[in-house]
Length: 252
Ligand code: SF4
Ligand code: SF4
Ligand code: FES
Image 1 (cartoon, protein in one colour):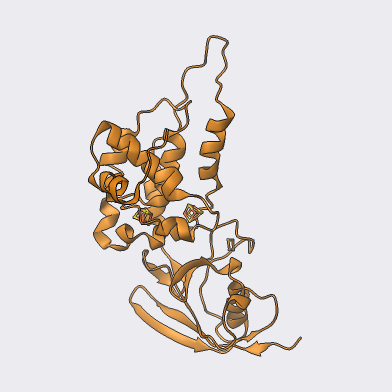
Image 2: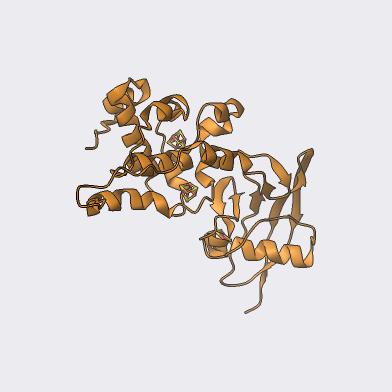
């Protein structure tokens, strides 16, 4: 089947600045946005910088903003757009641009290093450590994260430049949740979840949950239970208001 010319506006530039450049790639059936970017790279712009690895939604490398929304370019099919729609592709706004669609994500890896690793409880009298299947299931969800950082990109707290000094972001809130909710983890993480990692700055808008390609229920299953635990020990006005306005229920 013959391809159809489409209009793509792709951001080109570096840390000093840049602008959108228009391309007219030929799109055929079954293509995803990443295929189109590769075609632009092959035919029109050999120096276009973009990240990708798996082309299967599993490595988290190809994160960009497509028509203003954080997406994996390898999982965004061309047939979701109208035939005459112009498609805009730009780098993640929350992180500094290196070149074209490639951003510097190192801030995220620095946050990861701040989180203390799993600290196993001493084994039981029989020398074994046990946990219930429901506890396994609960933390398993958070381990599906592919570190695409789309949730970090969309979080308005992190989009605010100063927010990065205050809040670790949704991806690391779920890493903390996976440790804090693990009954075999012996560390008391609540004081630093509040003070160091800034749980109080999340105002539970759920934007992070909406963009997660792994469909992790970041806010309801991760952040809100952590906030509940903080509230139990301290006081969090956003969650108290959330409970009143939206009827957010306490998880057990
Ligand atoms: S729910 Fe919280 S962490 Fe998620 S995007 Fe909103 S403010 Fe950020
Ligand atoms: S939680 Fe979801 S959106 Fe956030 S980094 Fe992990 S996979 Fe990506
Ligand atoms: S290339 Fe791996 S998630 Fe898109």
